[in-house]
Image (cartoon, rainbow, N blue to C red; front, side, top):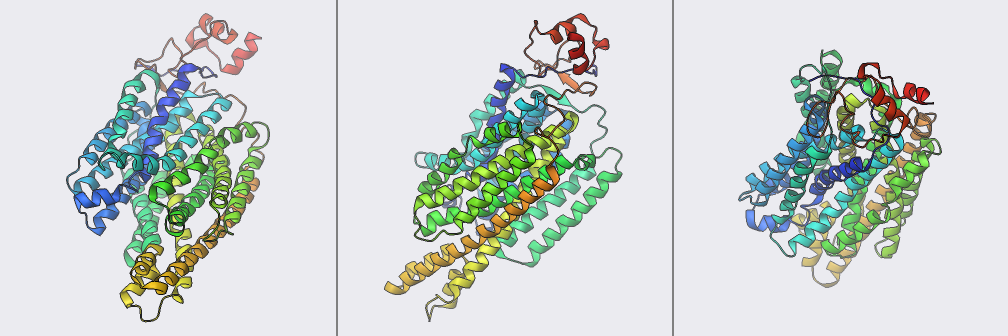
Amino acid sequence: MTFTSYTPRPRAGRREWTALGVLLLPCLLVSMDVSVLYFAVPFLTAELKPSSVQQLWILDVYGFVLAGLLITMGALGDRIGRRKLLLSGALLFGLASGVAAYARSADMLIAARALLGIGGAALMPSTLALIRNLFHDAKQRGTAVAIWSAAVTGGIAIGPVLSGALLEHFWWGSVFLMNAPAMVLLLVCGPLLLPEFKKPAAGRFDLTGSLLSLLAMLPAVYGIKEIARDGLAVLPVLALLTGLLAAAAFVYRQRTARHPMLDLELFRNRGFSVSVLLNLLAMFAIVGCAVFFTQYLQSVRGMSPMEAALWNLLPTLAVGGMAPAATALARRIDRAYVIAMGFAVAAGGFAWLSWLEPGSALWFVLLGSSVYASGLVMVMSLGNEMAIGLAPPERAGSASAVLESGTELGGALGMALLGSIGNAVYRSGIGDALPAGLPPAASGTARETLAGALAVAAELPGRAGDSLLTAARAAFTDGLQTAVLVAAGVMVCAAVLALTLLRGLGAGGVEGETETEAGVEAEESRPDGRCSEDHAPAHSLRRDAEHPLEQLLQQRPLGDRQPAEGFAREAQ
């Protein structure tokens, strides 16, 4: 097996776009699994009878493990091969889905969800890194990443709707079994359509760095989510501090290790670092506010979970074309302005929703949600494309993992900070509305959450219950208004950051429209797994014999080939 320099075909053909369709399958399913259990919890609780602690772990362990292993899996894919890691993750994800579907105890389901997290962590960075290897033309790659971004955000919105539909006709395990056919399709089509790519001379895998990254992400995400749920407590604060210390140790390890797991030189690139930060801020707003709107539709407007999920799906469908539109616009003007525009649009949507009242018309909610979602889809699609486009091909796996870790951390921070702000406003507003003589336990329940207040109100007679119900809904809406105003302020700051730090990178955000990778030593195989010596790399699957560059490739020995720019000059 040889390592060769190559000049990839700049334009992707039909086979590359078909391969993108295959890569979207794991994106949809991994993102759907974040939200797919929302409706299934009552059903699996009735059968498995988990304790309150076990129920929380059933919901959260998937996200914890996924976030903790992203950086490790990104680095592992660069070493063992991204296609190999993707297919291994697909196999594990499919098997774990079957175990989860037929779990006979809460502990068994928790273990299966943890395995799903491991599989998901292997799948997500591999998909984005393989897009980097499939699409070398900057325009095509931008479109591909925009489609990938839409699939990820769409999966989160589709998850509750699909699970609700399945639960109306089948048992709770069906929400996991739907993963199996897609994983089988990926395992069959992946070896035929996807290229293999691994970083040559990567050295030994940094096991110490891997453990430190896990110790950094897991406790940090756990601590942030627990603080958002229960407020400041000793264990979550200690977990958060442990995560921060482990993160500092991880950075030190990567700076001093002979073969670091994550090349910190990536962060010296201004475009890459700022893209990760801006994506984090976008996810901060999306996740932090999504929690409020789900509760608003169900507990304030009185919708059923399925009805609320369907209405929540509308803004996602409405903004589906914004990612490609933003990519097209960024080819004509400096993308700093496009990203800043996206944040400004999102700020406008959040500001609009700050006028929301308990009795506001449904169109008012959907319009505001569609506006802010449009802006943030623009931001995230361009941020993803810029980060992946600026990362060298041999580091695409690590770059994808950093990007994914940033979005996971942003979502956790949004849930914690915006959730805490909204809850503080709610508790302040509900305090004076509690009926006199209410037992302390019931009073505490009503103060904690809107759902608790609704439960207490249902037990109170006549006007006392109605009064508490009205006050609780008003207090929750006040909290929502405050949270979206904070989100709007963060979006304005993010727009200023984008203008300040990204301006001047050009319309494409990278050097030129088409990037070549001549001179990059990589082990690139055709889909049949054989090494490319006399052939184009696996992602260059369609050749045009009449193209002047192709004629030169056929006429000259491999060792005499020049970069693409040299071929262009000679062809002329």
